[in-house]
Structures are given as C-alpha cells and as structure tokens.
Length: 205
Image 1 (cartoon, one colour):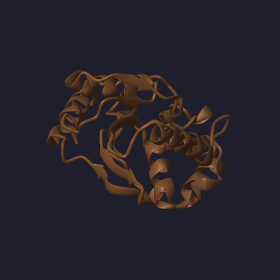
Image 2 (cartoon, one colour):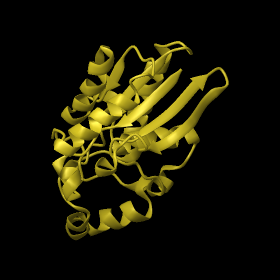
Image 3 (cartoon, rainbow, N blue to C red):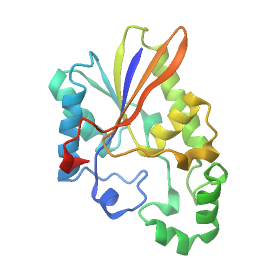
Image 4 (cartoon, rainbow, N blue to C red):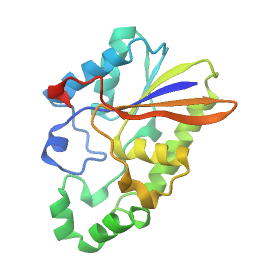
C-alpha cells in the first residue's frame, strides 16, 4: 500500500502563529492556492479514494484533490488534530504567560503534557494510529491512498511508524501543504519521503 499523507494548507490562525487544534477554521487564499498545487502533485498517484479529517481546512484540501481525479472523500474522525483545550487559539508567547508550567513541560518533554482540558500527544497518537490500522486493513498492498490530516496528527503517526519516542516530537518539522510518502507491504512499513514541499511554488512555500 502506498500512502500520500498530506497536511492542509494555511489558515489565518497559522499565519498569526496561533495554536490550531479542533477550531473549525477554513483555509485562507494562500492555503487554497497551496491545496490546488498539492492536488496537482498527487494527481497521478493512482488513488481511488481520499481519506480526510472532517475539519473544514482538511476537507477543503481533500476536495481539491478529489476534483482532479473524481474520487470520493471519506471522513475519518481519528485523523482530527490534537484537542488543545484551553490552549486553542493562543500564541506560543500567550501560552508561556498563561500556563508557564505547561509551556515549560511542552518545550522540555512534550510527551508528558496533557493540554489543559484537552488531549495529550499519546492520546492523539493512539487514535490516529488506530485509524491508520483500520485503513490499512481495508486495502490491499497494491492500493494507493491519499490521506489529508494535520500537523501534530501526522507527526505522531510518523513517530509511531519510526518507533520514535514522543519526547523527541519537537525534532520534527512539518510544513503547511507538505506531503509524506509511506509504503506498507509484507516486509513492513517504510517512510519513503517526509515533509516534501517541492510541489509548491515559491510564493506558497
């Protein structure tokens, strides 16, 4: 099985540096342009379905991909972003001021943090990986899929795939509208490429 794992494009909150989890904000004009370029990049992927987090920004990206190849979009709850709870919509500086202990722990060892009234990375990883396993079980080795999800969700999936502890989470960077390629067969799962943005024009990187 070949999977193109796509992060959605830019929203206004991304542009402003705000933590964005479950808040259902759509793509801004730059994000829509990124989505269109990403759709062109996977147009020949050979996929028969696009799986997506149900949040607006990911569904918008999924629709751009679906339009080019006329394939269905299937919403998957487990692919949603981290529930940030009270941290939703704040900047890093605001988080540092309002929750200094949480901020310090998040920077030092993110694996130990449960967001105030929200989720931990471990909880996110568990549900995202469960969704991954269900999709893997539903497809054959010869299938190609596109999955559209979010920054933290994709990074925890890749960490699980590589056996990387979540304490090293901040060592990974994932750009907006990037593509990761994962292959899975009888030999196991392999990360073929990570955080590719070569498909984006210079103004959309």
